[in-house]
Length: 286
Image (cartoon, rainbow, N blue to C red):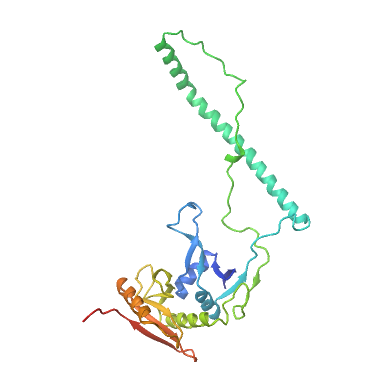
């Protein structure tokens, strides 16, 4: 069963195997929104988690291949938990681990510095002798290793800290019923969501791949195949069946679709759930 974690109305998939199954077996694309562990400061290539549209997550739940889980956002602090002994022990264990890590890094850094100074000692002595020779000074007698050299200082700010890429303690996870509106899943029963979902479901059942269409001013982008291999053919806009459309809006979306070489689909849903499509293509002046 694919686990979809719900956080404040957003659906995320954290397991890489589940993300692969969603795309390969169910034609659900989603959007990667996580930073790569080895390159966290760039946003050109992203990784897990995979964020799903509400329509994508609901489709998987309706098919019975996914379950919604509510993941606790954080654990209470020890002060707020009335000095909970278990939390105090966890804090003490973390601080002990950090102190041991710092001492180990101080030792390794000191050894590395000592080895580096040993390899450079001869070059330093030769450089000093050359400078004295150029100034006409007498050669400096060889000095014994100084035991009174200032001790090596390794600041705590330079300590490396491991950043986990997976939550080790998941805490208590609760199932979320997508059929009922709640704080975690507020979409159930909303007319706009129901309209968007019926359109999404109908296009998906026709064999298309569907992604968010926000970058082109629509609700969905409709692809004939995997978006990694094909360009979108349609920009889908979901409009209520009896809602009036101004001429300026029709011209705007028509011209937009022509400029990006896509057909605009005006999608509406009847009371019985039937989806109707109207295509717009800008033909210009004849």
